[in-house]
Length: 81
Image 1 (cartoon, rainbow, N blue to C red):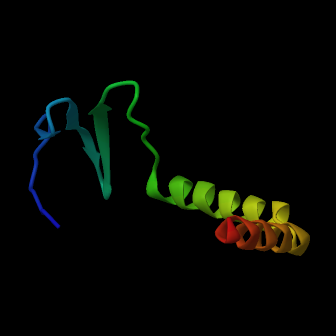
Image 2 (spheres, rainbow, N blue to C red):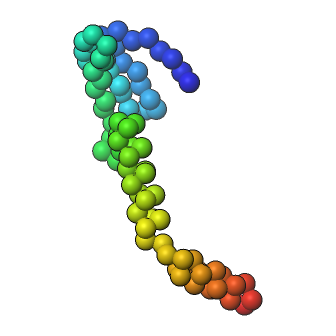
């Protein structure tokens, strides 16, 4: 992990096209501005963890034991060909 010290209005650059700038420091909070291309998805870590968890839950709910059995049988048939 790279650890940097930045002051108000100072930035860090990631790659060629992502800039993170310290906009405001208030008590124990730091306000950051992030400039990135539109194709780069940005999440707060806690939101990202929830998205991943919900996606995994949806997959578990959608895949039934019958589906797994059917896929295993299909896989066996394909191996024989």
